[in-house]
Length: 611
Ligand code: M6R
Image (cartoon, rainbow, N blue to C red; front, side, top):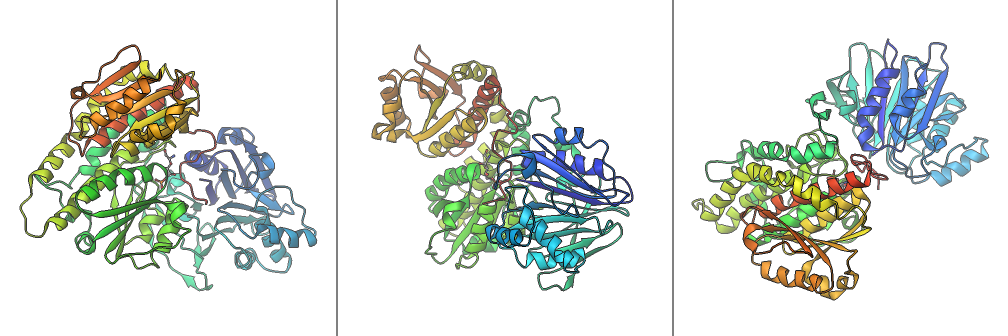
């Protein structure tokens, strides 16, 4: 969501801040700003609405050795220059903040009474005034921040500088990720290590309650009790290679096409000749799987849809599985049966709702916590008993594509491992497992074949350019695939799209059908095909236009009212992973026609670290 970068060095740090913000831009981006302490110990503040490029234009004469910077995704207050971070107080202190301060109204009232003027509608401004006030009471910057965070309710990742301490950068976190990157006689902070790729490989993740005092050659970290602590130093494996477009017009298109390679990586080392191996999932995987009698899966957005597909696999294999949206799970009571494994699924590993659900689950008696995640150095990974990585590689487009298909591949492998336990110990690998393994191996090639349909999908997309609504239909495990297709279309083309289990049509949505409502259907050749065909006839009979992705063997053919694109026959378990790919391409090409900002759709951010 919002991004933080900060630096203290013996060189001019403005280019480091701007470069770091550009690297974080995919996370949140309605405005950006920086505050730099110059050689005359003056605080230079620059802020602008829109892209970091706008900020760069107005910052070319800013120089200094200490500063903080921020890209904002609006929560409190509209995207506007006065709401952009950093926020300052008396032009002495500057603060960048990720998270939400829940008691900001109360603090604002107190501070107004003390005479602090308010220039923004943000919750953040109360933080900087509070720090300023504590400094006015005689505290140095570190102690003023310590005193302030004790008065905050809510979540924060903070970067703080003051012109009175021109060599000191303060970082603090509670509930919002923040890390310190170490350089050579220079140090940095960031909300995400990718911001620091060119300047730092060594880093430390701050823990909740930590406050750090950072200078060019020292880093002192204090925990929530004020005790000085050592935190683990990690070496980052991130590199610039993954952040290049490599000739593609958009990251989304690149990431759709990368799915063959990404899935190969997901499978790497995890398949035996005809079975799924468990050891590569980690030392504790076997023990955790042994304890698992049922599953509770929590996720958001696209990750929720991958969980929803996986539910069909788990239950078909005899494993009870309940799937729920994280933001709902957090706010209700739960009954937890013995042996229930709590699983989270997340591309970023930073989604606040999912993280909060995990924290709550840990108090409820689940047997273990397992996270299926793409980002190794993330909060969910750190908080879970076991993580099984999807190895999708960096995903930059806000609309998830390769993260989704690699999640599905990972979940199918987990389902196979749990199925063995349901069938009993000591069994030979059976035909079903052998078939699934064979199909998983062939999946990258099968995806390649679907990607070859792109020209036909481009022709199909032309029928959507002037539409305002679209309906997506699927049955069984392809119902969540239809939901994912609808989510992709609405996210990046801004066309209102809804998905229905096809059998539900007659219970209401059929009333929407006319020639202006394109209906997209996912029609693999499975046991529900005949039922789905009847549902499609219901659409045709009402003058609806159908766009169908079907198995060559499903017997569906194009005519004046129906456009059918054929996908090669595929095993039922693998089919959902394959059928989502044309839906991703369809959304992409419709968005291209609409001329939207495909990688950074309006109002959305890649990693949702606020509630
Ligand atoms: O990083 P996560 O997988 O936890 O993110 C969950 C959702 O925010 C995410 O999938 C979102 O729905 C995407 N924009 C979908 O394309």
